Image 1 (tube, rainbow, N blue to C red):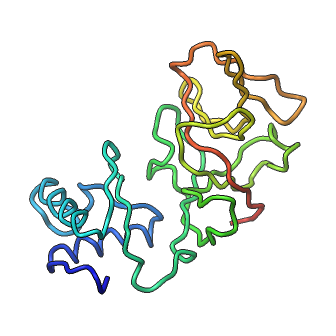
Image 2: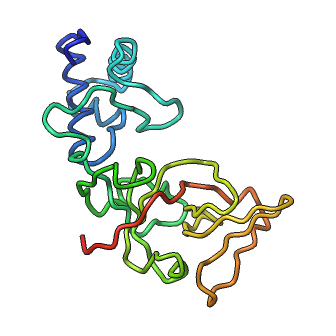
Length: 207
């Protein structure tokens, strides 16, 4: 932060962002920033966030309540110590990264994976065992709304979250299990199908 000049108020907001990333594995919402620092409204938090973005301390992502990317390294721990949130069972219709779904945050080194993951999804069931993804495993997931044919993805179908291999040919979308006991899922209504992310690795652990 030596090359970025911030006011005391801006520094406090940045510290709230860093603390949330360190402790919860995700940035705070505007409302959480306002509550933490005693601001009267979220507009005050938004004003400070815009100032931090102009100074190069953060990057804001429009349309996301937690769309704050911190560009300043955490003061004490390296990236590997920030940790990733472990997402448990996802309630139908709720955002996959809702705070209600987080079981815990665990320290994970990002370089262990092909791409830096955004969260770890606890796998339920045996539909993907033929590619080494077993019940209880933690699937490292990179957030994305797009994927290529053949990618292993986290998808939402009719509000329910599932892990499957994507098959997309001639406008027909199917989700394929890696277990002969399961039939492909045919996507009849594309408006009820959403890609939440794609798998970048798997951890077999008891955390």
